[in-house]
Image 1 (cartoon, each protein chain N blue to C red):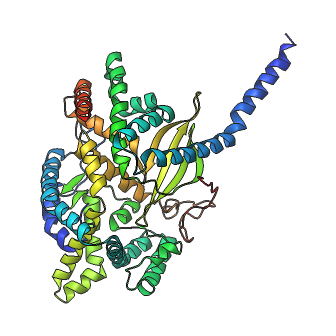
Image 2: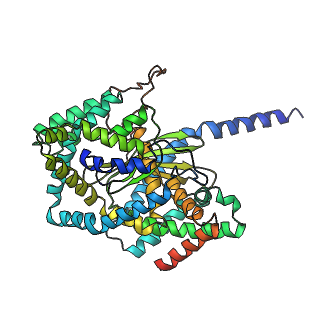
Image 3: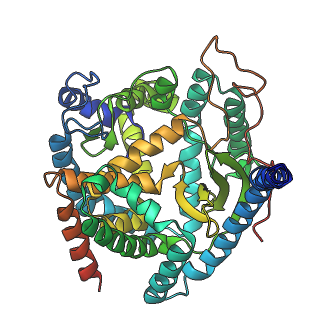
Length: 200
Length: 274
């Protein structure tokens, strides 16, 4: 029994090191991650990129770098629990494509303007990386990136633009659609399906 | 949304707005109201629809024409000029909120831009590291602890709430520009200023609003969410990277709760994106 103690000690030391020491390394990784994403975004969303290409590249970026299931679950809010497993699966699929289509278009206006990472701070078990985009008209937009690392590398869980959470905005819109249709999740799914069919 | 501030426009809709808001008393959350804080949703949606029609048929064409006729530097100069004209109201609210660092910035900007910037047509202050920040009485009332009240969509003016509406009226009354104009019976001047700044504002948001409308399932709900979150962020003064103004008597600890520092872009842990 006694010979296990060093092993337990080593284990505790190791887990201690793994959880405590890399916090700053995590923050550094998170800043580098966002800086890299900014550079990618300039390529993805540059004015010379065709709309179809933009959608394809943005889809890849969204799937790779965002916590899509986590965001999807948050965005459906309290209706996630009332939805059947099939509805949940279909929602995640539709939601992902809806976000890709909507944001590829909404970000079309962003013409690859200077993007600067300013710093980072912890927020619960997530890391917030603050950045700034300088608009050509002299204005500046603060963009905060929320990142999580739950295995499988860093994933973005939310983006705040000028203090406005994209995740919350989407949740509020979907909740409004469901609410105005008598609390039926399938009404939202129908609207999403219809919207995506029209986009093709 | 369209006309940020004008006593005249506001005065015209005050009665209507207050009547609709039920004497502007913060209404208890209606059943099924979720967290939208929108007990007057049906009325709000109706007005929102009318506003969209006005926007499509009047404001948007005018804003587009404005953008076609004037080259970008002229529009920028005009925008900077209108922004400079609004400085007294911003300064007043900086002071009322105890944000003396921001107030100093506003004064510095006016001095630089009115002189070097030829009456405010050029924004040199931003290049000197004193960027513009907006401020209004709605934010001041919020920092003083006033509740926002129910969400309102005002005719022509767009998203608001009783607190922001009261703020707009107060700002309009306090604005020296409008005050001078009305004292000399030059009401048209105030009117023209409100109209032109509305057109300027609209012309700067043509694409982004169009994109959001086109890609939204429920444009009304999206705008409501954006407005409420945006106002909350402005009240937190996040963009100026300042801590919340501490309530009077609260222990502010070591950080300057009421900042006297010149608010610029945060420099700590600067990391290059390149």
